Image (cartoon, rainbow, N blue to C red; front, top):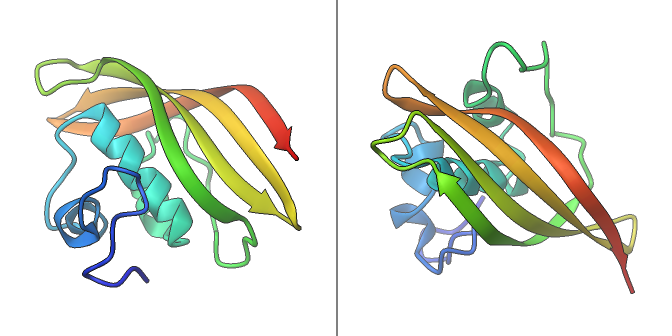
Amino acid sequence: MVKKSKTCPCGSGNEFKKCCGPFLDYKTKPETAEKLMRSRYTAYVLKNSDYILKTWHPSTRPASFDLSNDITEWDRLEIVSTENGTDSDDKGQVMFKAFYKHLGQKYCIQEVSRFVKENGDWIYLFGEQSKTIILV
């Protein structure tokens, strides 16, 4: 778990308890698609499968999802661009790069994630990976 005084894994530069922490604790909900994207990344870092499933659209969500045995070591998230996804939108997309290590090898994936707002809540619809790069 992230210590309360630590910087949030999502790369915002904010403290976890003032950034993604309240989302993952279900105390509040992300107001934008980008904030949902960041909180989902943080959930991957913390291996919080429940949050990933609850923020995944029912039409594309897998029946089960378990990160408890995942050995991926997430390093950092970079938001490349956002399109729509504000409080006044009902759709949005976020392009990001996620850097990680798996079995000693460093990687970077680039993805465009698509989000929809339903009943006032942002929810992940699906993602399209455009690149997975092996880093030396």
